Image 1 (tube, one colour):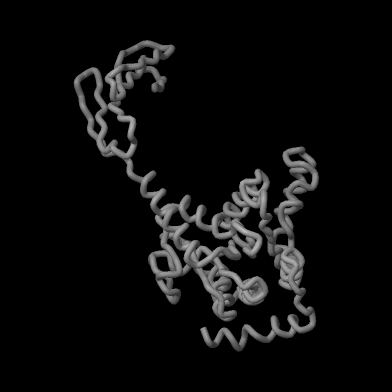
Image 2 (cartoon, rainbow, N blue to C red):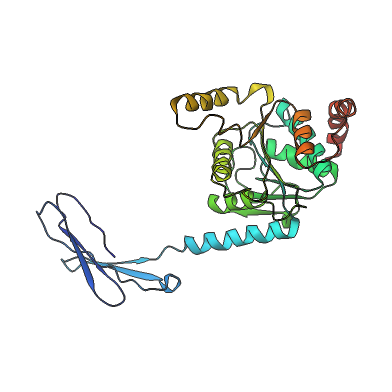
Length: 308
């Protein structure tokens, strides 16, 4: 094992493993010679302390990073929570669009209906904004809720590791974004034909786009849904994603994505009824009556929000 440090003062790096052998890599410019030695062991878990030594006799001790093991443990905790609550529909969306925003009430209505249609767990980032709207929609439907909260979230709950009203056994506060992402992805993966899951991308900002395109890439590469497809819905409320979709069309013109490639991976829905109809068709369920649901979707939130 070895690596080079290139610069005006560097000539080689010396790496020492548990068998005490050295590897030196010569650089292209020689002005001053120095060596760096690392004492390594084969078992990473047993590696707690390393020593860096320089030719001048200086020795620096440093503690080995423990985050890889901590991330792994946190991912395991995410999987345990999913196993206990069950897979379901994962909602990705803005933490900044609060109860006064029209997309908040639309999201609450959407998830109340989807939770009833698919009879499944609702999964979110357990934060404010549209995540909160999805949670309340599920609670109105009397369906289970699970979440992966992050320590710092844009919005009103930035400093707290605790959700203001969910039971602590229904969500996990993650230290690491990677663990949270593992959880949100795994919660939507179907393990059997009886699983009814989905990913619903609501309007959002940088974090939402990050999660959207990560999942999109996983579906594209058949890391998700290769055997049991997972419906991926983008809620284009008020043409929120119109410019993003135009950009993806431009990508087709530039040749960076194939014609029709992205559009085949997700479903763009302008209204809640479009999304409900798509999920009903996808899972071969009775399609909600349009007239009945238009009445319910326009009247229910005002009454039910008072109960939460």
